Amino acid sequence: MNTAPDRDAPPGRTPVRRRLRAAAAELRHGTAPLPAAARRAVRVTAAACAGFYGCLYGLDLPVAATYALFAAVALAGLSRIPGTGRQRAAVIWRILPASWLLISLGTLLAVRTWAAVLGMLVIGFVLAFAAAAGPRPAGAAPGLQLLYILPCFPPYEPHTLGDRLGGATLGLLLLIAAEALLLPDPTGPGYPALIADAADLARRCTGELTAALCTLSADTREAAASAGQALRPSRTPEAERPASPGVRARALADAGCAARVLLARLLEMPPLTPPGDPGRPDATADADADSDTGSGAGAGTTADAGAELLAAVGAATDRAGSEVH
Image (cartoon, rainbow, N blue to C red; front, side, top):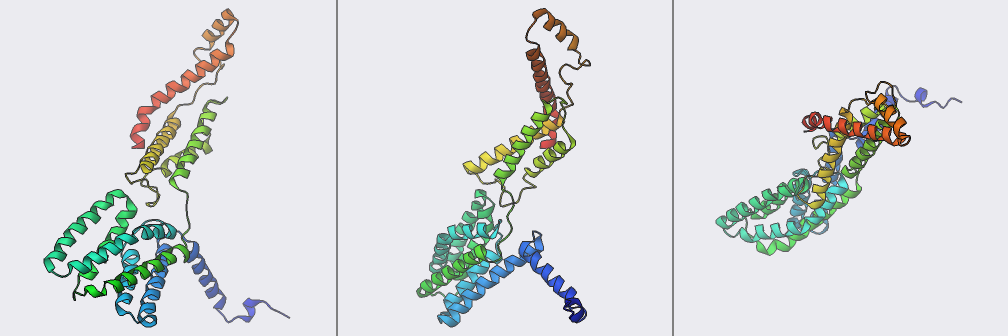
């Protein structure tokens, strides 16, 4: 009995199934912009629809349904918070009290047009200035501003503030759950891991330069160059980039810059002459000095190699500085 699926299946069905499986795998594990946008759209749609229809038909609260829908769309669809789904969920959880404050202010200041406009100027300045805190607060600023704008629209109904806060809270909680659990984004190495890899490669380069050959292998050169390029801010993912003014971010930025400079200087060093090589200019002088003293031969050659290594590093400093920056 023949059970081969390719013979029994209708023509063209097997390639279609393969394409569907490939598309599903790309949606689940792809790192390109299109799969990432598709995963984000699925999460936002799930959270917004669950909050809207749950409040509208389940709880019979049309005002809460509107704010549940708008809160999820404002902080996910209309904002660009960098990072993976779990990182965005953490950011949304931390700004939840700020969303309550903005909805309350928008509801109360809508009593007069001039009051709403003045509040818009102040809140807009504060949220724009919050971009100095890093890429994640800057990405959440448009959504927070929209949470103030929506309750400013007429009619003026301060008695619905409870429904507005409840609906927005439900929508944001659903969004947090969707970002954290639904189609999680693949994670890459963080900036501390990149610094650790660069430091390990610097140790490897130093070991090869002080070995018998006194030169770097092709594999080590390629790996060190790639590690240095990976630490550049333009090559680092926005969510992992140490761009905030905090102490930890500044320390990571300084460590990454130091690692890049060190790798660049090690790569710029010329090949050194192995100690004891007859071609070394000071080989004869070292031999005469060792024969006179009768001791310290090993220490002399080691000191010469160390001095040559330090001299080469100093000579490569100026050439490497322009390329690093």
